[in-house]
Image: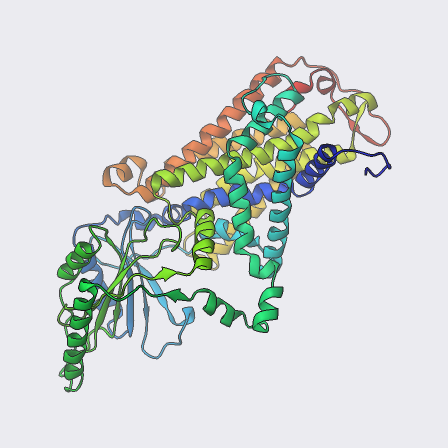
Length: 568
C-alpha cells in the first residue's frame, strides 16, 4: 500500500523502494564502491605512494641479499620475517621481533630493503592505499565498530536495492541491449539498466560477500547463544581443519628427515655456543622448495633463532589461486645451520564451512586473482560505480517535468543536485588530490600520514562548497575536468618527484608501480569521456535567461526547462 492508501502491485512497490533506498544511501554506497574498486590495487597503491621503493629491482640473489641485510639490521632478533618481491611488490618487506619484545603486532619492527643490495630504504610516512581500503568498510574519524555498522547497514540496503531493481524491470535483459542517446531521462535509464545488468552477478556476489565478512558483527546472536559470547573460541573452532589421510611416501620421507634433523639439532643445542652460528646458504633451500612446489616461487622466509644452533628456516609458497584457502600456500621447514629439510607439512583441507566462507570472501577481496583477473575485477567495480552514479543522476532527471510545472527548483531537489556533484565528481577530485598530497606534503613533518588524509577530506569539502556555489551543469563539468586532468598528471608527477617513470617501470618489470600509473590513465580517460559528452551537450544548448524566482525555491534555468537532456 502507498502512503496515500492507494493499492499497488509488487513491481510498483519495489520501484518505490528501489528509488528511495538508492537515493538516501546512494552517496555513501558510491563512496564505498569507488574506494573498494581502488582497493583491488591496494598493494600497487602502497608501492606508488612510497617512491623511495622504486629504486628496488628484484634480482636472482634477492633472498641471499635480504638475509645479509637482516644480519646487519637485526642481528639479535629472535625472529626474522622476509616478504620477497612479487608482481605486486617491488621491494623486500621485513619485520623482526627483538629479544624480549611482547608478542603480537606491538612487538614487531618493520622496514624495507633494496631487493638488489639488501640495504635499508628509508620511506616516507603514509597510510597509502590502506586508507582507501579501510575507508571502504569502516569509514574514518569515528569508532571502527560504528563505521562498520554504518557500512554494513548500507550494504544490506544495497543488496535489497539490487534485488528490487531486478523485480522492477520486467524487460531488464531486453533493456540491456537498448541504448537511446540524447533522449534525456530515457538515456539515463538505459545507461542505468545497462551498467546494472552488465555486471549483475558481480554486484550480487560483491554485496553478499561483503555482508558475509561482517556476519559475526551484524548477526552475533548465534555466537552468543552457542559460545556464551566467547568469540575467540568461536573463531578458533571455525578455523579448525581436517588433516589429510595417511602421509604418502614423500611426506613420510620428509618426516623421517625431520626426526633426524631434530635429533642433530638437539645434539648441537647441548653444546656450548662458541659464538654466532652462520646460517646455511639460501639458494639450495629455494631450489628444493621450487622443486617441491612444481616451479611456484617462494613468497616469504621466516627465520627463527638466527645465529644460533637452534636456527630454523621456514619457506612459504606464493599464495595459490584457490578460492577455498583464500590464497594461502604450502610451507617447508629447514634446519637453519645444515640446510636439511626438517618438515614438509601436508596441505591442510579446510572444513566445509571454511571452504564456503573462503570462497565467497576470496571473491570479495580478490586475493586469488592474477593481474588479468584483477583488472577484470577493477573494471567490474568501475561498472558498479557507474551504476550507482547513473541511478542518483536519474533521480534528478526524472523530476525535471515537475520542476517545469512549478517554475523553480525546490530546495530538496537542489540539495540532491549538490550532493550528487560532490559525492561523485568531488570524490574523484579528492582521491586524485590524496595522491598529489603524497608528493606535496613535506616528508619530515610530524603525523605526515594524517596530513595526507586531511588533504583528502579538505579537497572533498571544497568540492561540496563549489557544487553549492556554481550552476549545476557547470559544477559537473568543472569538477570532472579537474579530476581527469589530475588523474592524467599523476604518472608524470610520479616521475618528477623521485618515483620511477612508466617508461622505466615497464622496462624493469616493476608492475606494481606501472599498474598504478596505468590505472590512473584509465580513470583519466573515463572522466575525460564524460567531460567531452557534457561539453558537447552544454555547447549545443541555447543560452537563455533564467526563469523568475518563485517563492519557496531557487531559480530553474530556462535551458533546463527547454532541454532536460542537457542535464548531467
